[in-house]
Length: 335
Image (cartoon, rainbow, N blue to C red):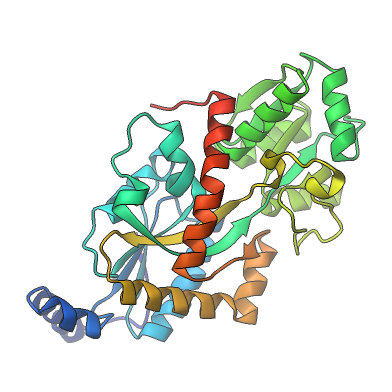
């Protein structure tokens, strides 16, 4: 059920709001944008409720409602790796009242994984603001004798055809990074794809698989309890939630696969007026700079990365060919 941030509307207020929204459809475009937002804002989250993307979206939505003076509805439309919800936004009216907050999966990598997508990111969407970058942990079962990234590479090379790595799905970063490590060490590791991180980590703790990449939010309790051993984190910056864990590049693993990180970002339908996109981006950046918001985002294992649409577009363009190479190297394809 969609979740709306704001005080409940009375029947009279709801009818008035509906009438105002209907009237706005017939106003000149410039007038409608001059009064933005003129009706409730819908943020589509293309994943089920309860995950990190959903939690961050609700945090942003609550603050955005207060700043813009309109209700913000969080609408979870999970399914098909984020495609269903993202497509809804790609086909929505470009007036700034329908937005998507998603992972790089639906905004970046799906275009390389699927032969056909119902939307084209570059044609049908405009990037509004990156919200957070999402480095993840590389963890192993305690029986693995390696303690650092280079030691793990050697361990993998020394145990050809004996090891398995998990992922939360075909085409995920966990799949692609594990595949790259296996191929680079000629290790022929087996890939085991799970429906989510929880069952993957359960098998890792149980020793059914030996290594996996996973979010800090999911692995931190198991690292602290000693059920899992952390080797390092991806990207070039240490995580605030795991400040004593070195990055993989910091340990000498300079390959682009270990330095790239995913993102959580906001996009709008293509054709949304530039001034509206800029307004939303400014609000999101201001929200993410608030200490309580920044603390909650970093506590989930993310790094605040909100900024301008131009900064998001530049980062997107820089990372695009890296993700494309990773997908092709892994051989991952989805229908």
